[in-house]
Image (cartoon, rainbow, N blue to C red; front, side, top):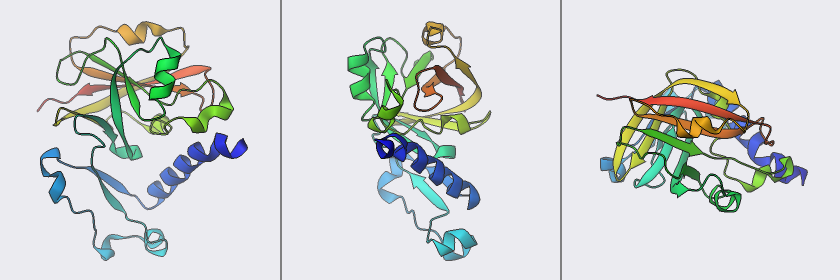
Length: 208
């Protein structure tokens, strides 16, 4: 039970620690050139730790599903998004969260100019943490200016983090926020392995 509880969180923390030490950089693939992506790197670019353990210090992240996916380069997150998930029905969303990130039913899709609400890593008890997808375990590492990429119907949409907040589960007004610009709310349970609070990260779309 202990192994099931802590395996994924510990694995993600260790990966992030190593990535930080070797200054690993994640790059996002252009969906139009996925078949041409080359992920190898020159040996000279590696630091000592990366050389010792033969770890790549750069990696190209290819969206899990170009039709609807999320990539967060800073934390190496890459997952499919399941659309139109009822956030009020735990039987529905807990099953979905085993396989990816959920888009809350009734919120916008990329490119529509509205509020997109995405959530992942939800659990009923701390010993059940390992049951669910680990993609948002490192969400607390994000800072203002970090990039969040959504892929929808073969197109890439880029957003920048503008803030984060820890709230009570009862503060559901964040789900139905109105906006005059396109933005994302990313949600996960907080602290990890509990349902005591919700960590929310906010990002707005970058329009070129």
